[in-house]
Image (cartoon, rainbow, N blue to C red; front, top):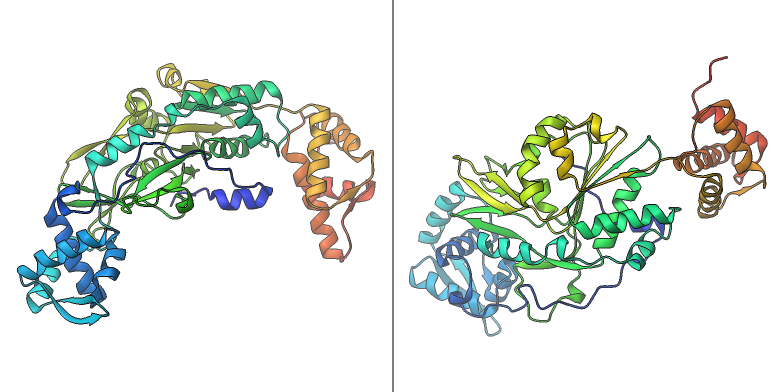
Length: 440
């Protein structure tokens, strides 16, 4: 499976307060349908869904059923009346003034047949047309990012002003960006923080989509962080109001993960990783090390990156057109021109080199890491570490070194049962444990 970036875990690690939601826009499914005729999917799809839910869950009140399928009580009651007229459901009791309903023998037979076709028995789906229109309306290209937004998101990191401005320009493109440079310079962290800038805005995510009677699930609680307190009071609950999503994949990415995932047992689809990232950020970490070759990904994504549409294949060969509305971030230790050809490189709109940090930046990173981990250190320690890296190793200063060296000191102190402190002795031990031995 893909590695899915949890915004909550990221904020917890760095002690960042959640962004304040921006004012609710006029767009979105903000009105709950009150009649079957107001819904964008066929009545038969919803009737079949209700029969399966009642068969699997047993008797439910109409209120409980309404909660299960995320439709208004009025629509649920209308469905119940139609199914009762077909002798598929019946009332078997009352809870107060609310009927308790269950499937009939005829309904059980019908449900058994339906479950052989698809075992989906969750939230009522929306139509593909509604999904496409909503995703286009919420495109990342419509998000305006300003210097204050970028600086607020990156405030916990040490980044020079020129690089911050490059990040802001890339975010306003709403297209794609290539972060490249040596290992340990913070490319993955920067890519994750870029998603925080966009996450200050909310979007509508459907739980499921219906296409020609087939169900495709979209909502993923590990990716889509709901903000119900910011949603309107009377919205269509088939959709969830969420912060813009962020999906992170690494070396495990395969070509199969970029297409519909059909479960032959449950017989419904799970949307691919890039579809879950729609209206947000899709990060491909360590680009070039995936199980799908760079040239394969190139051929797969030339049209999506250029025209912002993706074609996905259903079982049987039917292709559907899905919006490709996300900021794609490629992060790699390799120069982009060594990985992909000029035609593909042209479609990656922004290329940002993440290189070595200055002495002042390195010292500030060391100070922040030590402060966050409550580690004291002698005043000349950062300069000694800089001197060792430059002189003994002959390397540039990388932003990962302060964190990794302080971690070594903390681990040794925990083992010895003492408070961590970085002096010349503990620094030397940390260096010997972390850096490979140099040739004599």
